[in-house]
Image 1: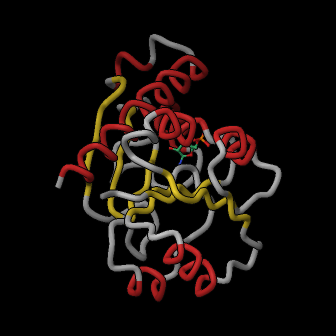
Image 2: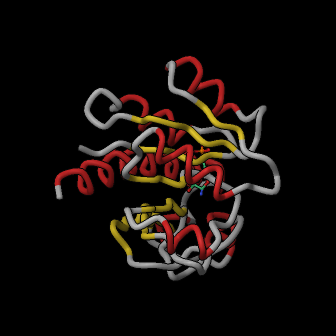
Length: 180
Ligand code: GRF
């Protein structure tokens, strides 16, 4: 049985997509690096326990909290912190991350904007988390716009479409991982 923890820092629209399928893929704990993130409101509304972590995360304590909830899988969905290598070594179960680009292109911040400005293809990637930011084996990847197609739209509408596809892909990733 898959028991998820979703790590967030912001709006939490991807958390929202995952909350919709939580009857099949339960979310045991939402971990937020920001107390006032809208993601926290979403989790509270859904009645899912939330743990707010400090700016300086106590990863040992967080590990214990996850173990106490018998979490098996971690999804970083807009989590703006780096997971340290000693936590990754200790956590021997899946940890995946969502990123709004066709990795390995455009890791890091403002990926959609940078790819759009470079007239590059635009997409979404879900990958295993490793010590290096936005790297690790790719689980799912989808092009949302070819380079040419993206330029026919505004950056705003490209961004909205990327988020819409993200919401589909996060659910697909959860289904994929929980089948195996
Ligand atoms: C998403 O675009 C995700 O790819 C990136 O951060 C954003 C989080 O959005 N890592 P939300 O908080 O899920 O709305």
